[in-house]
Length: 448
Image (cartoon, rainbow, N blue to C red; front, side, top):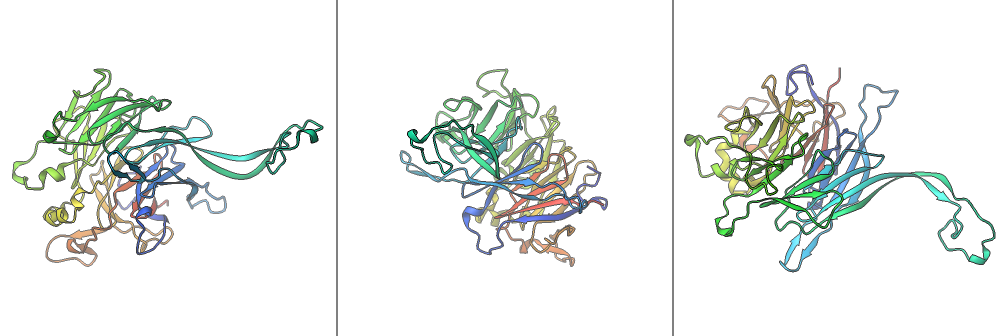
C-alpha cells in the first residue's frame, strides 16, 4: 500500500458498488450485523439480523474494460439461523448473525462459521455444475421403475447443468454458552476455534460438536460481585497456543494455553493508566473495548473503545504505541449519547492487508482511516449521494467551534441513527466493504 493511504493526494478512494434496497423505512431483519472477507478476498460474506448470510463473489475483470476492477456479485444466499425460544428461561433467542469467520480454503468448497447468541454453525458452500443421468432403478424424473421392466443395465453418465451453489450445514455447535456469544475466532492450526460470551471462552475442535473445553471463566461465585464482562476474543494469527480477550473495563488479557488448561491466569495484561484529570461519570462506559484484532504480522493488536482506536505492541503492556481519536468531538455530547443509548454502540475495527493502515466506523455513516506511517487520517462517508460509478470520495470534516466552514458539518447535525459498526478490508487489495444499516458499500482505491 502506498504511503498516504488515509488521505494523501496520491491515494484516493472511489465508489465501486452498493448493495441493498434504498427504502427509507428499513426492515429490522435487513440490518447488516457482520461483514467478512475470506482469506483470498475472492468472497465477501455478510450476516444480518434476519439470520441470513449473503455471500458475494469477485467477478473476473473483463478483457474489453481492463481498467475496471471486477465487481462483487451475489454468489449464494441462505438462512443460517432461525428464531428460537428457550422454554426453560422463557427467553427469545434472536436469529441475528453476530459473527462470520471463514476457514482457510482446503479444496474446491468453502467453509464458514456463523453464530447467533447461542449456536454456532459450520457451513459448506459448494458448486455443482454436473448431474448424473441414466439410473437403473429410477426414471429421469425420479420415479422408481417397475423392477420387471428393467431388462438392460445402464451406466449412469454425468451431464452438464446450470451452475448451482449449495450451502449445507455440516456441524452445529450448540448448548455450550449460558450467555450471549460475542466472538468466534478460527485458530491458526485450522482445526480448532474459540467462542466467547460475556463470562466464558470455549475451545472447540471443528470435527467435534458434542463437547468443548472451557478455557476462560470469569464468572464470580456471587453474581452480585460481577464487575466486568468479556467483550471480544481472538486467536493469534500464527501461534495456535496464544489468544487475547478484551473486557468492559478497557483491559486486554493475553493467555497462553500451554501454561494451563484453564487460562484464568493471563500471561500478559494490557492496560493504559487513566488520566485522573479527564475522569467523568462516563469514563468507565467509554473505556469498554468493543473489538480487538491482531495485525496480520502477529506483532501488534488493535483495540477499539468508544472514542478511540489503540495499537498495542505485544511486547509492551503498560500503554499503547499508537492512539487515534475517532470522534473526539463527541466527548462533549456523552450525556445525550448516554440518554439515547448510543454510548453502548459496539464499533469494530480492521487492518489493511499490510498492517500499514486501519479503519473503523463512526456516526452519520462516516468511517475513519488512519495511516500508521504518516499518522494522517481521513473521514469518508458511505452515502447514496456520492455513489456514482468511480466517483471519488470527498473527505468530510466535522466542525466543533462556533464558526463553520462551508464544507464542514456541525456536530449538532450528525445523524446518530446512521452508524457504521462493521467494516472489512480485503486481505490483499485496497478494496473495503462498509455496512451502513441495510446497505453494503464497496469502495476501492482509484487506479491511475
